[in-house]
Image (tube, rainbow, N blue to C red; front, side, top):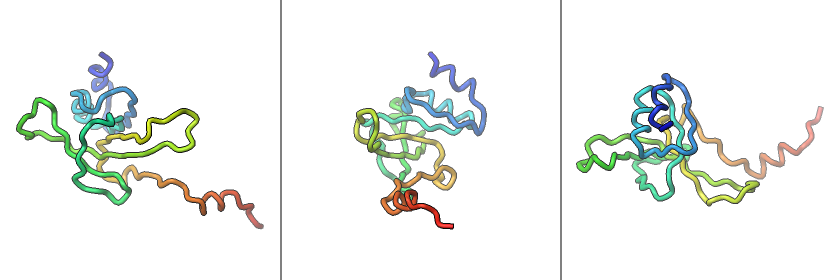
Length: 127
């Protein structure tokens, strides 16, 4: 019920983070139509073929509604895969988010900090 009511509350350029709304639903398409920026989870078993890799490690994929047997009305998504390391809670392994922010320069992924960065953070400043 809440998923059907969500698009009526959205405005252009809002950022909508979700944890329990399926990106496969009509709610996704309706929410995109509002101009809101979406960042929603994608089920691990959802087929999201890589059409183009992006410089930040994310990729573009096109999805189709299950009713669209001829695959004529696809929607392009940006797929972001990540893992949680050293989490306080057990993880499922890798996670996937889908977003309608297709340009990685508008919402770049942060690379994991490397050991050199960690050492630099621990080094006292001189001066």
